[in-house]
Length: 212
Image (cartoon, rainbow, N blue to C red; front, side):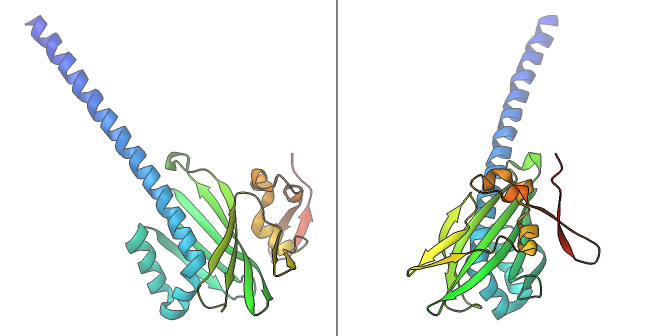
Protein backbone atom coordinates (compact mmCIF):
# COMPACT_ATOMS: atom_id res chain seq x y z
CA UNK A 1 0.00 0.00 0.00
CA UNK A 2 2.81 2.35 0.96
CA UNK A 3 4.61 1.56 -2.29
CA UNK A 4 1.44 2.24 -4.33
CA UNK A 5 1.08 5.66 -2.73
CA UNK A 6 4.70 6.46 -3.51
CA UNK A 7 4.24 5.41 -7.14
CA UNK A 8 1.07 7.49 -7.39
CA UNK A 9 2.89 10.54 -6.02
CA UNK A 10 5.70 10.10 -8.55
CA UNK A 11 3.18 9.83 -11.42
CA UNK A 12 1.31 12.93 -10.22
CA UNK A 13 4.59 14.81 -9.94
CA UNK A 14 5.52 13.91 -13.53
CA UNK A 15 2.07 14.91 -14.80
CA UNK A 16 2.15 18.23 -12.96
CA UNK A 17 5.61 19.05 -14.26
CA UNK A 18 4.31 18.47 -17.78
CA UNK A 19 1.38 20.80 -17.18
CA UNK A 20 3.67 23.51 -15.77
CA UNK A 21 6.03 23.14 -18.73
CA UNK A 22 3.17 23.32 -21.24
CA UNK A 23 1.72 26.37 -19.50
CA UNK A 24 5.13 28.04 -19.55
CA UNK A 25 5.50 27.35 -23.28
CA UNK A 26 2.00 28.68 -23.97
CA UNK A 27 2.68 31.83 -21.96
CA UNK A 28 5.90 32.48 -23.86
CA UNK A 29 4.13 31.89 -27.17
CA UNK A 30 1.41 34.43 -26.41
CA UNK A 31 3.90 36.94 -24.99
CA UNK A 32 5.92 36.85 -28.20
CA UNK A 33 2.78 36.85 -30.35
CA UNK A 34 1.51 40.06 -28.75
CA UNK A 35 4.95 41.71 -28.95
CA UNK A 36 4.93 40.95 -32.69
CA UNK A 37 1.30 42.05 -33.06
CA UNK A 38 2.00 45.38 -31.37
CA UNK A 39 5.00 45.96 -33.64
CA UNK A 40 2.91 45.29 -36.74
CA UNK A 41 0.05 47.42 -35.44
CA UNK A 42 2.41 50.30 -34.61
CA UNK A 43 3.94 50.26 -38.08
CA UNK A 44 0.46 50.18 -39.62
CA UNK A 45 -0.65 53.18 -37.55
CA UNK A 46 2.27 55.21 -38.92
CA UNK A 47 1.60 54.05 -42.47
CA UNK A 48 -2.20 54.11 -42.60
CA UNK A 49 -3.60 55.34 -39.28
CA UNK A 50 -4.29 58.92 -40.35
CA UNK A 51 -5.79 57.87 -43.70
CA UNK A 52 -8.03 55.29 -42.03
CA UNK A 53 -9.19 57.78 -39.42
CA UNK A 54 -9.92 60.47 -42.00
CA UNK A 55 -11.94 58.07 -44.14
CA UNK A 56 -13.79 56.07 -41.48
CA UNK A 57 -13.33 57.78 -38.14
CA UNK A 58 -12.46 56.17 -34.82
CA UNK A 59 -14.60 53.10 -35.48
CA UNK A 60 -12.68 52.15 -38.62
CA UNK A 61 -9.37 52.62 -36.80
CA UNK A 62 -10.44 50.62 -33.76
CA UNK A 63 -11.95 47.81 -35.86
CA UNK A 64 -8.82 47.36 -37.98
CA UNK A 65 -6.55 47.17 -34.93
CA UNK A 66 -8.81 44.81 -33.02
CA UNK A 67 -9.71 42.49 -35.89
CA UNK A 68 -6.21 42.21 -37.35
CA UNK A 69 -3.94 42.22 -34.28
CA UNK A 70 -6.21 42.03 -31.18
CA UNK A 71 -4.90 45.49 -30.28
CA UNK A 72 -6.96 48.27 -28.70
CA UNK A 73 -6.92 51.96 -29.53
CA UNK A 74 -7.99 53.02 -26.07
CA UNK A 75 -8.06 56.80 -26.38
CA UNK A 76 -7.73 59.48 -29.03
CA UNK A 77 -6.42 59.78 -31.66
CA UNK A 78 -5.39 63.42 -31.83
CA UNK A 79 -4.66 64.63 -35.36
CA UNK A 80 -3.70 68.16 -36.45
CA UNK A 81 -4.48 69.70 -33.06
CA UNK A 82 -2.79 72.68 -31.41
CA UNK A 83 -0.37 70.30 -29.67
CA UNK A 84 0.04 67.37 -32.05
CA UNK A 85 0.49 66.65 -35.72
CA UNK A 86 -0.75 63.21 -34.73
CA UNK A 87 -0.83 61.06 -31.62
CA UNK A 88 -2.20 57.53 -31.28
CA UNK A 89 -2.26 55.24 -28.26
CA UNK A 90 -2.66 51.49 -28.59
CA UNK A 91 -2.29 48.63 -26.14
CA UNK A 92 -2.46 44.87 -25.71
CA UNK A 93 -1.52 42.43 -22.95
CA UNK A 94 0.53 44.74 -20.75
CA UNK A 95 2.16 46.64 -23.63
CA UNK A 96 1.33 50.27 -24.42
CA UNK A 97 2.47 52.27 -27.45
CA UNK A 98 2.41 56.05 -27.55
CA UNK A 99 2.77 56.93 -31.23
CA UNK A 100 3.69 60.52 -32.13
CA UNK A 101 4.16 62.38 -35.37
CA UNK A 102 6.85 64.75 -34.09
CA UNK A 103 7.75 66.96 -37.02
CA UNK A 104 6.95 67.49 -40.70
CA UNK A 105 8.67 69.34 -43.50
CA UNK A 106 7.84 69.60 -47.21
CA UNK A 107 10.53 69.05 -49.83
CA UNK A 108 9.66 69.11 -53.51
CA UNK A 109 5.95 68.59 -52.90
CA UNK A 110 6.55 65.57 -50.66
CA UNK A 111 6.07 65.60 -46.89
CA UNK A 112 8.80 64.09 -44.71
CA UNK A 113 7.93 63.29 -41.11
CA UNK A 114 9.72 62.20 -37.96
CA UNK A 115 7.72 59.71 -35.89
CA UNK A 116 8.29 58.27 -32.42
CA UNK A 117 6.88 55.19 -30.71
CA UNK A 118 7.36 55.15 -26.95
CA UNK A 119 6.95 51.61 -25.64
CA UNK A 120 5.70 51.18 -22.09
CA UNK A 121 5.46 47.63 -20.76
CA UNK A 122 4.61 45.62 -17.66
CA UNK A 123 7.33 43.28 -16.43
CA UNK A 124 5.24 40.19 -17.23
CA UNK A 125 4.55 41.27 -20.84
CA UNK A 126 7.94 40.15 -22.18
CA UNK A 127 8.47 43.59 -23.73
CA UNK A 128 10.72 46.35 -22.38
CA UNK A 129 10.29 50.13 -22.16
CA UNK A 130 12.07 51.79 -25.06
CA UNK A 131 11.80 54.37 -27.84
CA UNK A 132 11.74 53.67 -31.58
CA UNK A 133 12.20 56.38 -34.23
CA UNK A 134 10.99 56.58 -37.80
CA UNK A 135 11.25 58.79 -40.87
CA UNK A 136 8.24 58.52 -43.18
CA UNK A 137 7.09 60.28 -46.32
CA UNK A 138 3.67 61.11 -47.73
CA UNK A 139 2.32 62.84 -50.79
CA UNK A 140 -0.73 63.95 -48.83
CA UNK A 141 -0.83 64.72 -45.11
CA UNK A 142 -4.14 62.83 -44.92
CA UNK A 143 -2.89 59.91 -46.99
CA UNK A 144 -0.72 56.84 -46.55
CA UNK A 145 2.88 57.03 -45.38
CA UNK A 146 5.91 55.09 -46.49
CA UNK A 147 8.40 54.28 -43.74
CA UNK A 148 11.88 55.17 -44.96
CA UNK A 149 13.97 54.65 -41.80
CA UNK A 150 13.45 52.86 -38.50
CA UNK A 151 15.98 53.06 -35.65
CA UNK A 152 16.32 52.41 -31.94
CA UNK A 153 18.50 55.54 -31.80
CA UNK A 154 17.18 59.10 -32.06
CA UNK A 155 17.04 60.39 -35.63
CA UNK A 156 17.86 64.08 -35.60
CA UNK A 157 18.09 64.72 -39.33
CA UNK A 158 17.29 63.23 -42.69
CA UNK A 159 18.69 64.15 -46.12
CA UNK A 160 16.55 64.05 -49.25
CA UNK A 161 17.30 65.49 -52.70
CA UNK A 162 20.30 67.34 -51.30
CA UNK A 163 18.27 68.95 -48.53
CA UNK A 164 18.86 68.04 -44.92
CA UNK A 165 15.85 68.24 -42.65
CA UNK A 166 16.66 68.83 -38.98
CA UNK A 167 14.23 68.07 -36.21
CA UNK A 168 13.98 71.15 -33.92
CA UNK A 169 15.51 69.76 -30.75
CA UNK A 170 15.34 73.15 -29.02
CA UNK A 171 11.53 72.98 -29.08
CA UNK A 172 10.44 72.40 -25.49
CA UNK A 173 7.12 70.80 -26.39
CA UNK A 174 8.94 68.30 -28.58
CA UNK A 175 11.38 67.59 -25.75
CA UNK A 176 8.43 67.03 -23.44
CA UNK A 177 6.99 64.43 -25.83
CA UNK A 178 10.35 62.69 -26.28
CA UNK A 179 11.02 62.39 -22.52
CA UNK A 180 14.57 61.45 -23.43
CA UNK A 181 15.61 61.43 -19.76
CA UNK A 182 13.39 58.33 -19.28
CA UNK A 183 14.87 56.53 -22.31
CA UNK A 184 18.58 57.47 -22.25
CA UNK A 185 19.68 54.35 -24.17
CA UNK A 186 17.85 55.70 -27.22
CA UNK A 187 19.79 58.99 -27.15
CA UNK A 188 23.37 57.80 -26.70
CA UNK A 189 24.70 59.98 -29.54
CA UNK A 190 23.07 63.17 -28.22
CA UNK A 191 22.78 65.15 -25.00
CA UNK A 192 18.98 65.15 -25.09
CA UNK A 193 18.73 62.92 -22.03
CA UNK A 194 20.19 65.85 -20.09
CA UNK A 195 17.46 68.22 -21.29
CA UNK A 196 14.63 67.74 -18.83
CA UNK A 197 11.48 69.78 -19.20
CA UNK A 198 8.36 69.91 -17.04
CA UNK A 199 4.82 71.11 -17.67
CA UNK A 200 2.96 73.15 -15.07
CA UNK A 201 -0.78 73.02 -14.45
CA UNK A 202 -1.33 75.80 -16.98
CA UNK A 203 0.37 73.85 -19.78
CA UNK A 204 3.57 75.90 -19.76
CA UNK A 205 6.73 73.89 -20.41
CA UNK A 206 10.09 74.90 -18.96
CA UNK A 207 13.53 73.39 -18.44
CA UNK A 208 14.21 71.68 -15.12
CA UNK A 209 17.32 70.49 -13.36
CA UNK A 210 18.17 66.85 -13.87
CA UNK A 211 17.47 64.78 -10.74
CA UNK A 212 20.19 62.26 -10.07
